[in-house]
Image 1 (cartoon, rainbow, N blue to C red):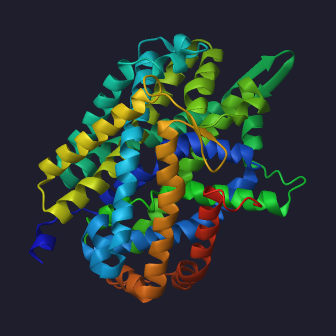
Image 2 (image 1 turned 180 degrees about the vertical axis):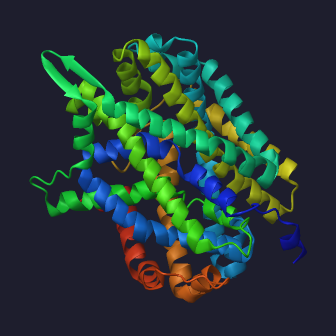
Length: 467
């Protein structure tokens, strides 16, 4: 009990919501969501994603936050406290952010590079062919900027829950939201004429939001369904221990129902706006064929060319865009690191300072390996999905395609069948608030979510190829 009394907590619901939303609004929303929406029929993907966010995503988010608040423990120790036989799930949940943080900081360093380029008026150079490849294959600069980004994250974590995570979220998240809305509105106003053909941002917006179901087959629909479900892991930061860690800092008198609803709304709105920011611009200047880029190719190759095509205003828009991306990357990386640091503190009874230094060194070592994977240690392998991968891609595949679905499946079985849904429902309703989606939660956690997750895992492992 003494440990619980001394445990830090968010000062209020708004602090928790902003921190959790900051975790959810990361690179996955910005460079993966628009690509999937463009690939999977625009509005059809949006509709499926929204339905899943309100059912599947809501179920996992509620479960993890409730587990965190109930146990007042981080992921490494929370599962063991609920059931000794299920302690292994905590190890896997903690392993996910340990794997993610090194390569996330490497990408964070790439964002810093581009932000500096646009801030100093060098946006045209960033749009040149070979600029991105030349940068990531160079030996020293990526290492330095990765370390700079990691240090910034570590400083916030070192300052703790209130003075670090909550305070930074209260400053960064409003700025992030303003930039997202501003760039999204601008993207709708642009137009471009190429070879006698004029395309506008509003036309690109229509491509984004109007469902394209021509010739839709059952197989294609399942692909959309699984893409949207996989995206929810990124969008809501579930199955990686983060929401358990953040949930452990939520006060017992906080209204969990209201907070979870706010996180859902905030995240879904920003994910949607990420598409509004990117798809109309790419469509206007590069046409439909330009909308096939994803990941680093979209953010660091395609978009700089779009900004360059905008003329004088392009450098300013590029600067604001990469400032927004930097904010998003920072808040997400903070949450990833906190999941590990809080686990070290709870399991090994370390001070926050020692835990931050230890995880910082682990992430630094991993980040160096990832950076060198583009030059000195470059190699390629084929993943079960058929994709060609380097070190960063391998780490991403292990964490996101393998471990996260396994953690989510285990969490569903534990909450739905071992502890029973009532354990989570009682935690949510402990202050008298009504859990309006109780029946939906029970059906999802016991039956629908586990089945969908098993299908997703089998597809990720290359076992299920018919979908």
